[in-house]
Image 1 (cartoon, helix red, strand yellow):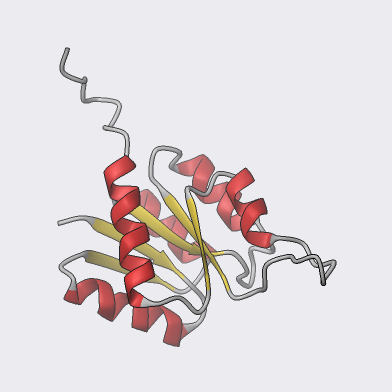
Image 2 (image 1 turned 135 degrees about the horizontal axis):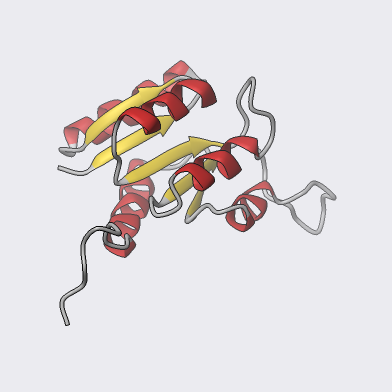
Length: 137
């Protein structure tokens, strides 16, 4: 059963994701912010991380950078409710920036359950084997 770490400071978003993933047979650890997410990452192993970009105490992209540095082989899906950049708006493209900092995939909130599950399954399919396991010749 794949283990998913969900890091989101919005209790409703976190609980919704948790229920959806549990119903799909995933083992879910839900944390409410960067510090508790990092503690969970230190205590357990995960197959995929879902990390909100903007959370209190870890400003901007600090959480994406730190989670990727601590677990570079675990696919990280960055989530954000902020809008994408467009030609009509000078706002930065936060999700593109998250990819540059190590995120494997990005999801713009709100996303559908199908989009979330497809993204997680894609990440699980691309995950590199752990360093202690050698590939068959």
